[in-house]
Image (cartoon, rainbow, N blue to C red; front, side, top):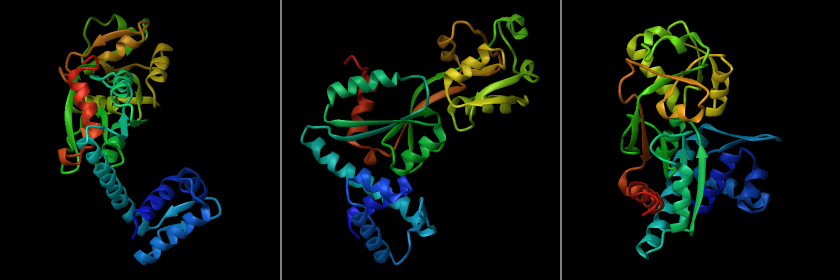
Length: 295
């Protein structure tokens, strides 16, 4: 089994298409096909079910994918570690982030990182926290900024970033806007909510808050981005329980603290592999975050 065979296999698995994978790898499609066949012969198992339009992983292929990604991540880490010993941070920084995550200004942090480490290629992917945690644990991402996770293990650790309470946002003419300076969760049991899909951190925080209080909640409109959520609330199509810093994004909405939601309901963290598996680029980014981009 050669390293390039694993690289080719992962590329086809991700693209679900031989032609697109070949273009991404800048190799001929016939050469890519031959590489996959060689890997299948070596493993004595078919890795893909091929059709004219796409390919899908077999059971053996799914089993290999996680291990192949982990091996390739370790190889990249080895190259980058040698470069770091020589005083140069290079390679690729693969970062994941939830939207508007508290405790870090992602764009500013990456701009400062690029000025200090111009030889590092930066790749950023925005996704829900559950997927990001899986990708960091599997080695597909070097680190991620997301809603807290209690899944610290041999493959994943979390570094606290920020914590803040939840706040209710509603239209200025919504009846709740005149209900007083503070709302109890039970006051919201009959409301229609706008919220994110379940994989996103703010949704998980809100669900946990209402479940803990034993208050039922109806989510009628689900979105994948902050601005769509705020637009729907601004049109009085529902209310939203969001992290406190979201209120700064739309001054036209009425914001009301939630009395029994706790002081640190929404907690964000940096998700990383164990220290020995953390890439030099990820360590450099965390050092910059801890010191502040101005340093």
